Image (cartoon, rainbow, N blue to C red):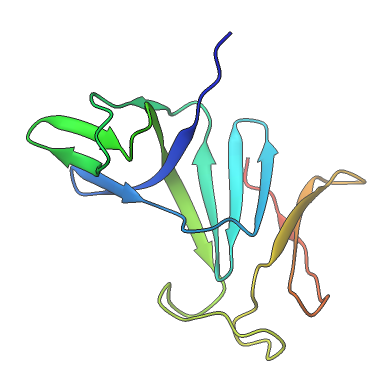
Length: 130
């Protein structure tokens, strides 16, 4: 078996862009990959892998060729949830208006659930979407 890197991407029209500049927390549950990125929770499906056509250092589709920043594979985002009123609102730790998702873990002690937490130590539970 051969392993390789995968670029997480967000579909945009008939192309795609790199999705996450950083990952504060990652949980793999079933076929889903959940990525906490400060103000949002991104969802990827492990069954959806795109093999790109070129190893160019660009990201997206151009001239009929696809590329993923020099990687062979891209995995598209299938959903996202954000903590503010809109996806453009920055997270605000401690205020409660738009909590920051600074880590993510899986709780299997009862009904499976995702547990995000802020750098303040405050945590809350999200139900898993399976």
